[in-house]
Amino acid sequence: MPQWVEAGLWGLVAGGALVIGAAVAWTVRVPPRVIASIMAFGAGVLISALAFDLVDEAERSGGLVPAMTGFLAGAVAYVAANALLSRYGARHRKRSGDQQAGESESPGSGAAIAVGALLDGVPESVVLGLSLLHGGEVGVAVLAAIFISNVPEGLSSAAGMKRAGRGARYVFGVWGGIALASAAAACVGHLTLQNASPALVALITAVAAGAILAMIADTMIPEAFERTHVLTGLITTVGFLTAFVIERL
Image (cartoon, rainbow, N blue to C red; front, side, top):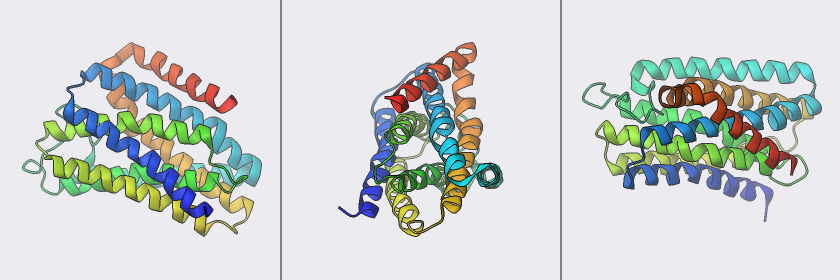
């Protein structure tokens, strides 16, 4: 199987976790505290993957300066795009409660939420495509981290969409589209950087990592802390250790 096809399939698997989470939220009433706890766990998993796989690999393969530059640039780009989307109603797109705005309250918020979900998912998928460049195998720890964190992301956001009065066609259209976009992003990331220099690959990896960390702080931690409060740090730590063990094994 060509590696770019494999990259797309892994991107689809990771993006499919969002659909799984959305399906759970749509069919079962999950208590908000449980959603928040899973979100905190997923945040810890992603932070571990960033520290031990993405940023570390970027620094080792491309050097400290490209890694630092890309990491900061990714965070700045994400925050700027997120700030713009927040003005159009996408600020609370991962919240499971009544925070999400309905279309009647904020016209155009449906499109903004969809674009925001795409913004959250693309960097993760690009990382999967890039991981195949290092030895020809997908990074298992990175894949596990993205999959584990995507389930609560889809669950929480879909619960909020449902409470805001959005229909099943919109909810599953958004997450199904993001899953397909994740596959495409993984393919493109792999194809376009096959012959790139280690420094450039390191830079792109660090950009994606910086965007993911900004996403965790801006959208995942607030949802987790609102319900789990003082337990947020402990649950996040357990998620971090889980991903660390997966990476080491």
